[in-house]
Image (tube, helix red, strand yellow):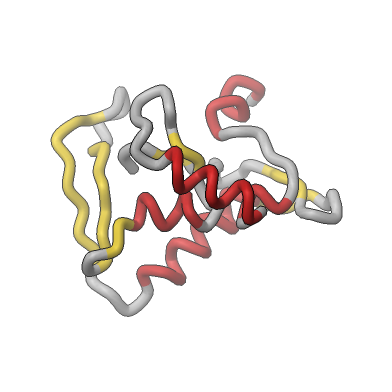
Length: 113
């Protein structure tokens, strides 16, 4: 998704109590819950190195990329875009999602694994 990076499916994070949980799975479940019962459309023109479309997705008028970051299930991918930095700051201050505990950014996790 354009401008964001979410935890990987097998990535473990720590919750508020310091217990590990599969935060990649939690992020996916949260997004699935948000889009359930609605029509999702995505648009973009660029592709990543794996030929996947780098897209912004919407459910109605709601920017789902922003929703993921604002609810703490993804971080702003500042290397490529600063569009969602304010949403990340809001999520971090409110300790939403990933920010309620401890986690490695997805790009840090990839390097380590």
